[in-house]
Length: 637
Ligand SMILES: *[C@@H]1O[C@H](CO)[C@@H](O)[C@H](O)[C@H]1NC(C)=O
Ligand SMILES: *[C@@H]1O[C@H](CO)[C@@H](O)[C@H](O)[C@H]1NC(C)=O
Ligand SMILES: *[C@@H]1O[C@H](CO)[C@@H](O)[C@H](O)[C@H]1NC(C)=O
Ligand SMILES: *[C@@H]1O[C@H](CO)[C@@H](O)[C@H](O)[C@H]1NC(C)=O
Ligand SMILES: *[C@@H]1O[C@H](CO)[C@@H](O)[C@H](O)[C@H]1NC(C)=O
Ligand SMILES: *[C@@H]1O[C@H](CO)[C@@H](O)[C@H](O)[C@H]1NC(C)=O
Image (cartoon, rainbow, N blue to C red; front, side, top):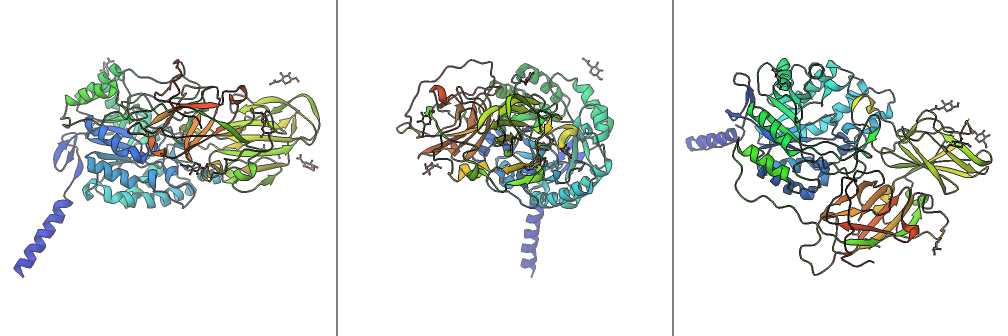
């Protein structure tokens, strides 16, 4: 009996030992305490949703070897709940595996759980299906919004609870909402609701916090009892003054900059953002000299694959690359900025011994021939997801439960238009671009905020088609309710067009299903209407360690979307820039035939004879750079 109970005690002792990890705020000494000892984090942001799972370990190891002891990551709600009540935590969406990997590697985690995240991510992480209620006030106490939030957090947070530090996991603190003080609602009941919700699911121990810009008005609206206030600011800021703003809300406790900007975001059509390393080093040093905790946003930016980019207002969508000029590039490459930051960190804490995982090799597979398959109109029957939907006036994507990509809007011309006649979206209601054809012949492009009218010609009864593209939903500010599609009537010669037929498209399924391989026998449409092209390539044999990462270049192409082996790499738009190449991670390539599908929305080079795309070993993210075509290293098929 005695032996039994001492064994029991021993076991109990072990289990107490296992759960004796603690993480708390020491208000007296203005610091964190981890397992009873003073602690500060030097952290970096990585978004698992922007790095393929295949590369998670490589990127986390590089962060660890830079001397970081923690990471910040956002949880994008719409990445995990594509439809109400339908959840995806598999593959690249497997946040639990990501967090366990961080734990294994020895990185603590600061979890930015949302529900809103901003992050230059489609609709700031909020699912577009919330817009089913047109008048919904997002990020407020709107009961329909809160109901959806409660359901989602009821799924997410119980998965996170075992991963809290005190339960043996890596999560030391959890952020609630994101820069809420910058939002117009300033709804304390909403923040109170979230705080209670998080407490209910995560328990009383974990530190919950808020992050806001380092200005008093932001902190006033973004802070609430129960959430520890942190601030964010970039290089060149007066660090003392910025932390005084945090002190306004938190007179005691650790100083924290939750987003110290190592670079900056891009928009299509604007110059690529670059932030000089010297500026970063200077302010980072000041922050660390203050004894503060810091998170570098981003440490690696990664990629907006597929349709995941967001947009800012006035409407400016972000490109596919989220390189951010961060210390690790989009492709995870080590940079001078990485090593400079590592040297700063070394002055404040130990850097792990051992080799840094090297930059992964990139391979220039060369040019491959592309071949026209079908126009979107020719492929319509294999692209439609359901429908068609008929309505007198146009419906939005959201009314048709189409949340990304493309919808084809069709009507017939009510009379003859022999002279150029104005087709107009009088109230700027095209969200975001419409590629206009009459009987399959390209007429022009309508674009939100940029092109509200074009002239067209055609005869009575001719088919007027608008392929409408969402360029990504606004992720910041009061314009989050970013409906897509045709939101207002179109007029032709000042007459409202009616009798619409709408085809929501599921292009990704058609690509994955191999339905876009057979060329059209019709051969009627010109190459200036939206058209699919295909190509394929083999990884050369006899070269060790292939396949490797690569970048794809679009010489003479204009704007569109590209898939390799069914993986949606994102949008290309060299005609606008600054991004010219797209990152191709090696794990999507196979040693057998690799299939490429390109949807060119405007103009391909194929009529002029040079119908090719090219795989190169260097990214071009800044359109102003000149590039030299690589030698064609390998076969064309
Ligand atoms: C920085 O802010 C502090 C506190 O507000 C102020 O005393 C100091 O003069 C400022 N430094 C500079 C260089 O502006
Ligand atoms: C459309 O045509 C009218 C004349 O028919 C002309 O005045 C107008 O500038 C044209 N608009 C565009 C956008 O080309
Ligand atoms: C389109 O025009 C019709 C007829 O004037 C009108 O009833 C309807 O409200 C308009 N739709 C939009 C979205 O403006
Ligand atoms: C729709 O089509 C019908 C039949 O062609 C026509 O009578 C009606 O005026 C059209 N409605 C609109 C709003 O264009
Ligand atoms: C399609 O048209 C082009 C030129 O317009 C021609 O070169 C090609 O042979 C045609 N293809 C088919 C399948 O008819
Ligand atoms: C590429 O397409 C061919 C059919 O043309 C198919 O047999 C092959 O499995 C595809 N490869 C991949 C990696 O999807």
